Image (cartoon, rainbow, N blue to C red):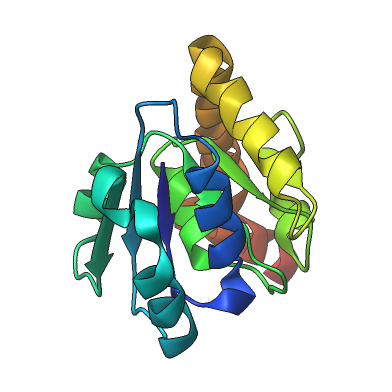
Length: 169
């Protein structure tokens, strides 16, 4: 599992970490990329499981392709959002995304087609959808492929330039 963005409460990190903790019998890694804010660093210090779980805090990064190479399922559990660039990146790389149904996200994610939408702060629902993709690799691959196709058709520079050209004409 992976997350890319500011590692802070408003981005749903404690929801993600609590969900990850509840997966104690599952051999899985969680990679967090981005600046770790104070509120979350205090939370991480209190987590007893930290030493026996596969949680990787990578901090700030320069190369998105390196980040994406460590991620099979992208998780973005934000509580409030506009249109997160990291979701677009996951789509570009064809990585299935589980994200919250907030802000502009439903404009680019069609539930169970180009990604999976969950309600903010709903750890049970997030766990259920993570388990769905872990146990159904074909579905995960299909959602990732659909996301990549949608990105290329509607969100890429080529698609944007084509739309702008049509508007100008």
